[in-house]
Image (cartoon, rainbow, N blue to C red; front, side, top):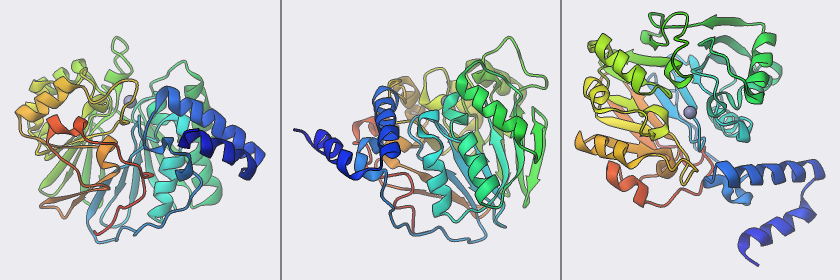
Length: 343
Ligand SMILES: [Zn+2]
C-alpha cells in the first residue's frame, strides 16, 4: 500500500463524516485539475505556525500560492487592504482565507475581480461570507461587468447581487489613489469589447508607488497586449511584470514585455497542472530579456515589498530565478502561508 492510500484509509477512522465526503470530492478534483502542493492530505487539516508579516509602512504585494489560479493581496503603507481575485473554485477560497488569516487581516477595503473565470472568482462567495458575517466586512467591490455561463459564475453573481456595500464596474481610464499609490486601470475598454474573449476583457492594473511600479495584466492575451502596447508608453513601464494568463503562450509577447521592460516576472500557476504552465516559449522570451522569474509552482507565495524606491522580493521558498530553469525544480510541499517571514 503506498503512502497516499495508507493516509486515505486511516482518514476513514479519524475524520468526521461531512468532512470526509468533502475531502473525497476535493481529492478527485485536485487529481483531475490541480495537482499541486496540497495533494498531500496531511497538510489540509493542520494548523501551522507562521511568522507574521510586519506592518512596516511599506507597500506589500503578495502573490498568494493558490495553485492553478490567481489571488493577489496588497497591503498599503497605511494598512489599506486590497485583494485582487480569489483563487480557483475547487479550493473554495480556503487558501486565500488561510493566508489572510495568517496576516491578521480582518477587513478588505477593495476586492477586485479581474474577470469571471473560475480560477479567479472561485473563492468569492466564501470570502464574502467570511468577511461580511464573521469579520469586519468588505467595503468596495470592483469588477469588469463581464458575464459568463458557468455555475461558478452563477454563484459569484448571486453573491455579488446580494452584497450591499459599494459595487462598481471599472474600465480603462479609472484611477484609484490609495495612500499615494496609484492604481491605474488600463483594460477593459469602457462598455467591454464584445468581439474579444473574456480573457481579453480582463481588468489590467498598473500600480505606481513613488519610483516603483508593477503591472498586473490578469489573463489578458495577445489582442489586449497589442492594444496596450500601441496606446501606452510610460504607463506600461514596470519593475515587476505579473506574467499574463499564468504563463500560457497566449500572452507575454515580446512587444508587450519590451514596453514593460521589467526586472522581475511573477507567474501564478500550479506545478504540473493539466495546462503545463508556464509554457516554454514564454520562459524563453523572459530569458531573452534577462528577467528574473518567480513561479508559485516552485517558489510558493511570493511577497514584493516596496519602500517607494526599491523592491525587496521574498518568496516562500528560495529556488532558482532563471526563467529556463524554473521548470526543472521540484514543487514545494507546503501550504501557501507557511514560511513567509523575515521582513
Ligand atoms: Zn486564469
